[in-house]
Length: 98
Image (cartoon, rainbow, N blue to C red; front, side, top):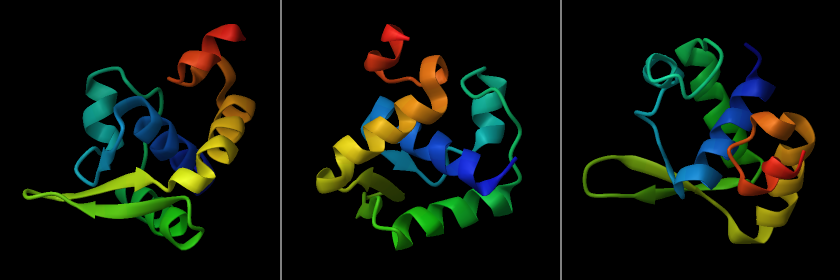
């Protein structure tokens, strides 16, 4: 799986859950049938770093672990990108229109 696909997965997950935790790796989600692809943990970590550097997400320190949330100013841009790239596969409610 490419880093780009991992980035879309992470952003979609954040929109779906409100935040995204480092421990939510695709392997665990694959077992729960939440995500339809396998992902190398290194690619996944690289995707998180790229999203942080590109200013799409920011870290939120919770008592137990690191979480990420979307930077509010980029929300509409990210939503458009997810709908364009993922279409029906997106967890966004707006994706049902496709």
